[in-house]
Image 1 (cartoon, rainbow, N blue to C red):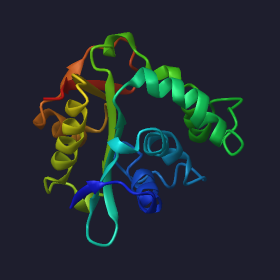
Image 2 (tube, helix red, strand yellow):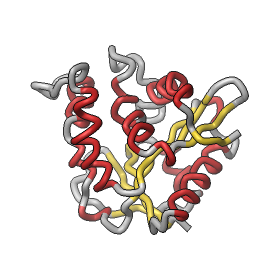
Image 3 (tube, helix red, strand yellow):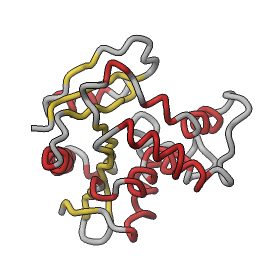
Image 4 (cartoon, rainbow, N blue to C red):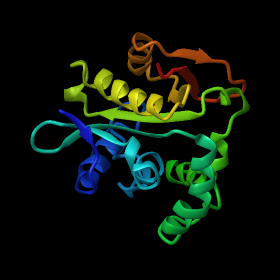
Amino acid sequence: MIRAAEPADLPALYDVCVRTADAGGDARHLYPDQDLMPTIFLAPYVALDPSLAFVVDDGSRAVGYVVGTASTEELVRRWRSEWLPAVIDRYPAPTSSETPTDQMLGLLHQPERMIVPELAEYPAHLHIDLLPEYQGKGLGRQLISRFLGALAARDVPAVHLGMVTANVGARKFYDRLGFHVIDVPDAGVLTYLGRATS
């Protein structure tokens, strides 16, 4: 079942996030703090725009989700003014980029990285994750459809996402849903994809 996310879902959603955070694979071995990846890629979206947070519920718990924002620029402003102050005591800015944790902390403390000129025509963005055993069943498509519908209802014209280029399975999924490559020079390990919301 696809439904709106609820506060009680957060522990399950944190688990889904970290278990899919290594280019679609389990990242628990990479980050000693299991809450770090959700603090960057899940929780700020649920906190700052809960009306764009949807989950797959298998009858006992949430096993996948889509979260995002209707306005990347607005999210960045609120991330800086609201989200960072709420988490900075637990996650201070890194002093190096030597470890995977340091690198992720760098992302947490630089929300402005999300404002990319080439993405201006795609103001919304999203993150979607499903536990592996629930992939390939059409649930991801349903999540994206629900998310796009919510954006279209707000008159948001287009959405983008950044995916790790090495995650070829995810790329096939997005291709099937009508996403196309957005040319962003110097994108590093990421490929940016976008599509209209309707």
